[in-house]
Amino acid sequence: DYYRDNCSTRVRDAIDRVIGNAIARQTVDRPAGTTYRFHTQRLNANDPPIFTGLLLGLGEGVDRPISVWEEMFLPLAMRERLRRVAVAGPDGTPVPLVKSERTLFESTAPPPPPAPPRWLHWYLLLGVALGGAAAGLGAARSSRGARAGLAVLIAGWGLVVGLGGVVLAGLWGFTDHAMAYRNENLFQVNPLALALVVLGPLAAAGRAVPLARGVAMALAGMSALGLAAQALPGLDQVNGAIIALALPVHVGIAVALRRLS
Image (cartoon, rainbow, N blue to C red; front, side, top):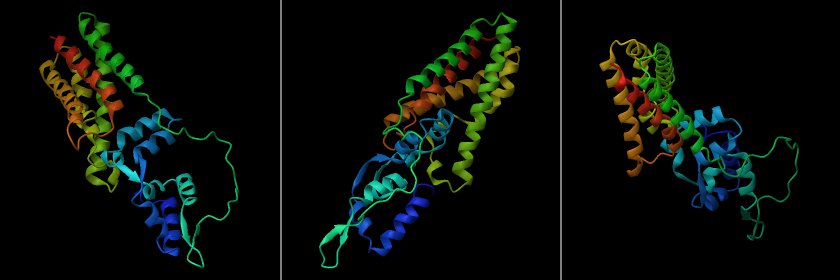
């Protein structure tokens, strides 16, 4: 568990044992006002592909509010929090745990942002562009070029989304990556999409259109269901950016295939 058992938490736990659990007593019940996802996103804001991959791959477990104790999975957070911890001195009077500090190395890299970037509109813009392109190519079905473009778009989307769904399902079903369990992004990125790798080009060529249309409608329906599920208690994973990207594309492909004969 890379959040609850890492190089930072092990140092925290070792110090805590030595000082009689003083750190735990003063931090376990104090809310940090953040989540694991909050920190994961802000620390990866300089790398959009990694940012997106982590947004996609982490499930609902990283969205619950964490305590100050849990926030110390980050070395810098531990440094800040330990500055406020007190222990009993020789006469029983509380004294600061940290008496003095010394910097051994200072990075020249810019510090991470204090909060995650708000990129939802960029994901939505990309999703609308891809979905609109699919619908537009479907409307121009009389053109061989449009059909070829639609075949490539559907097959490419199906490959990326389908493989992504396989990875998410595998992380949940066959690994001990607990923070990837119960991932609502499976509504958006589903292994069923792999069928479009074959059915998309076939449908663009005028074959297997009903089957391709059925798969596309099912994917669009699941994507919409994932959006609607956000209103339900316990199904409010922070994945708005993934929905904003995937839903317009699923709908655009479904619309395009409905226009094919």
